Image (cartoon, rainbow, N blue to C red):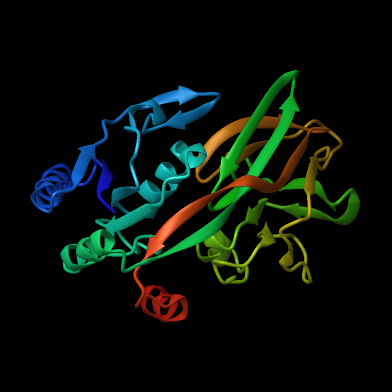
Amino acid sequence: MRQFGIIANRGKCNAQSLAMKIQEYLNNKDCQCYILPDKNEVVESEACYTSPANVPNGIECVIVLGGDGTMINAATDLAEYNIPLYGINLGGVGFLTESDTDTMWSDIDNLINGSYRVEKRMMLKGYGESKGAKYSTRALNDIVISKRELGKLIRFEVYINDVLLDTFMADGIIISTPTGSTGYNLSAGGPVIAPRMEAISVTPVCPHSLNDRSFVIGGENRINIRLMEGKNFDNDSALVIADGRVVSKIISGDTVYIAKDTISTDIIMMEKTNFYQRMRTKLN
């Protein structure tokens, strides 16, 4: 690799200065490196933090300085550009990031020399309509249907390929990719799925039942979630949230459609990286 872009989370105190150091380091290695400007705006009902229009032609890799949230934002903003992402952790757990400030220089050398592998991660596509307003979204981690009111459950039906799976009374439901299985899905008691699998986890959040569990289905399946009337047959409402971003409000009778996206995200890993070792280290 010889051409790089950098996305730096300006919320991290040393991100901007580190971006400039990496740019200088790569330039001294006869590479080209661009620091991509922030662009906090709303595009098609979703927040956009990095404008794809600012990515120069020929970029072979985008270096992401931040945590998992920064990686997820970059994956969403640049999804249609098919540019591999390489993460340097400046945040907390950093499950999606590959390096930290202690190992990044040797790992950057590996990027230049081609000593790495690329993992293709499936994404989800969600869409629907509420009160005549259409919406669509994509997610690297998960799409969540969540209650709006504290202390109040919502009732919804879940269909797999138009066949009713179950009806739930719960705080919400998480539809997760393998990449997102170690996030909110795991906190809600869902299963961890190896990241290169093409599978989808369906996990109710705090269901009012003794026997409701997660379901894991193949990535080729389509999921429909229909919000039902409230407990007293009144209209209810919920939120559609993609990777932590609120996409739309829905009301009773609305259906959210979720399936594997045709677009995936490429994440760069060093050859030494092992998912199961990382899981043991990060989650313990």
